[in-house]
Image (cartoon, rainbow, N blue to C red; front, top):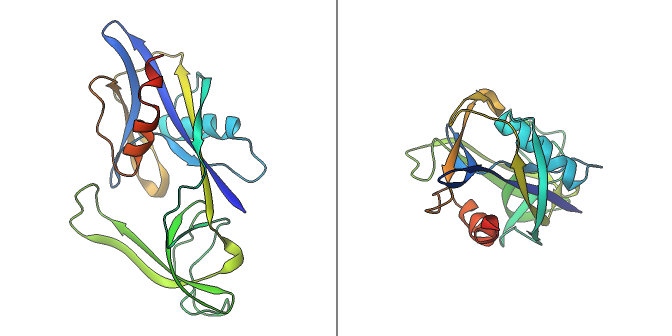
Length: 207
């Protein structure tokens, strides 16, 4: 099973030039709006939904499709294809760790024992220069809940509503997101691995 992702490159026109919408995540740094395509959902619906959820914008249209990354996972990584807890042992009757992980999250995968894969998840207090680990789980996931292919769709959106240069809204896990408009020139600085996403489409965004 391939888990599909979307990245929204939202732009607006200003007298000084085109701007792109980014958002400041309280832990993960400056990012592009992005997320997971739900089961049975098309990328067109997903990119508009994710853009709205992470920015609050409602007047967005798809300008064009910019391409995709066929498999974004590195060696030793797998992606969750359904919501799941991580188990303390390779047994679904074992103690599950507290967080419920969402479909679309990526894990480091180690050895396999029966149908289970040894997985690790690490979350930091801030990126790109973390000072501490805020969540570390070393456990097990059933093989049927993991996929080894992740496709990412790049989509250019136009914004048709007037917004302030910066605002805030509630995000996931009780975070507050801070969307803001940034000039496309010079190229904005965003977190890894999203720098690759922007590099892939940067020249096309000016057309």
